Image (cartoon, rainbow, N blue to C red; front, side, top):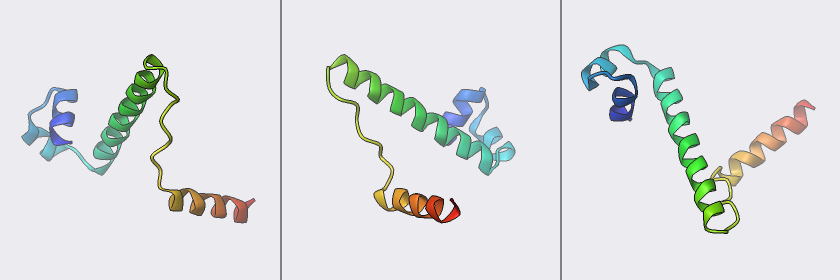
Length: 72
């Protein structure tokens, strides 16, 4: 993650350590995950396969559904 942040923003890893915070790491993780998701979708389409299923844990999805229903 540190290398990815440094590469993206053209900084030295030591500069990233000194200047970054939790939000920077969260945004970078999200960006990398989104890029990987798009690559998997494109690869499946090129190979004529169905898109891969989401990688979200079923328990997390169930909790989100329960919370949404109770707030509804």
